[in-house]
Image (cartoon, rainbow, N blue to C red; front, side, top):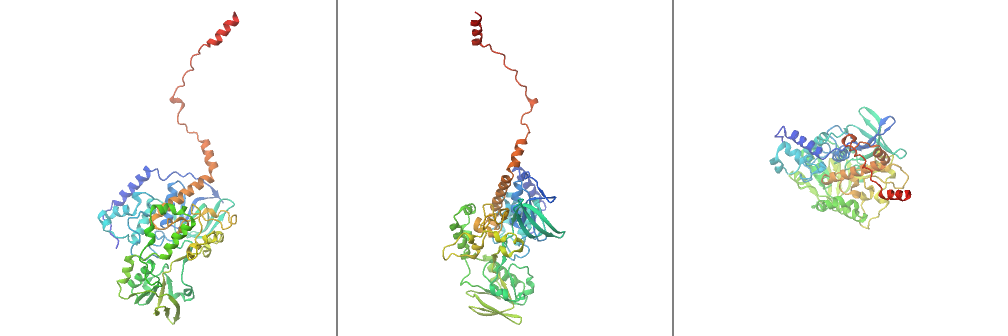
Length: 498
């Protein structure tokens, strides 16, 4: 349950401190990227697609470096990202002390925001951050940094234009349809950023009224009195099962392929600043080996999420129960598994996401030209991994690279700052622990790119710069020194005269 504020003046004081911190650090830097227009409209420095945590951190980092950034998000204001829409956990899974998108600014952390309202004692009593309270913090983050977010703006297409160094975005909003131009585009589109939910092949043949993916927007109250099956054993499976039980489901059967639920979060055990900053520079073999091991071991559900399910007497954990087939019979589903047949009314697939950039219509202008890891790397036998093979092979500023050089000029102006960047860059583009480091890497890379692209402009500005450091009326030129007789020349004249 979210704690109620105890101080009406806490946040104003924190915001004043943040403004002072930014002023001491000379942030944000003045805007220095040359202004451009195209078709009589301003060209954006950077357009960011997605206004969740990663998009906000990227925009803030760019602004701090004096680069303009505008976010386009399809959701209504305050509902960007999954936290207040499709996420169903009670609390975040990350430890509360992680600084998340604070960008190294203490006054911008969730802890500072929380303590300013509820006090130190409440912070010490807090176990994990309530999900909806995290969304409140992100709303404040956006407002206190005055980030430019255009809500209810859907991106219909992203087209690199190699001829003029721009990227064209087709945008639909409540005001209608228009074309926006930007020099660079950042895709901060979250967990399913380059694809979408994945479900087993048999699910695609089932009538849609019988099933949902755990990421679907759905009213769980419709499951009241129904027999529900949840496929999977990860965090999303537990959250979906618990939400169904709390909504009054007659019973929930978790259908778990493995013989046991994963117990240890291997990725958490590997987390340190060395990995955060070093993964990008690892040999391909090590990048693949690390990420494949994490995928193969799987991330276990949080203990709290599992207890949220197990406290219900009508919840059942069916281990070693992979689904063999599903047959609709009237208004029921006959779900045959290795542990027997279950008669259910509804299935929820907590089966994760796939990377499928070609399947996203808004990326059609460039998706077939993107180089994937499968285009240049073959893993050792036994280490095959579809998610990793489908991952884009990104450059040092998260930029897409061409599968065949020269086939899609301008592709490098589109940057992947979402989950599919993990194999190339590490977990810095969407997860809470290192999102600040990822946002700064992106912003610094883009700032350097802008300067390189406009170096002639900046050199001309340097040549034209004429603000004097010393003024003529502040000093008096010394008179020339008195003439000193040239004794040698005088002696020569005397000899000539004699």
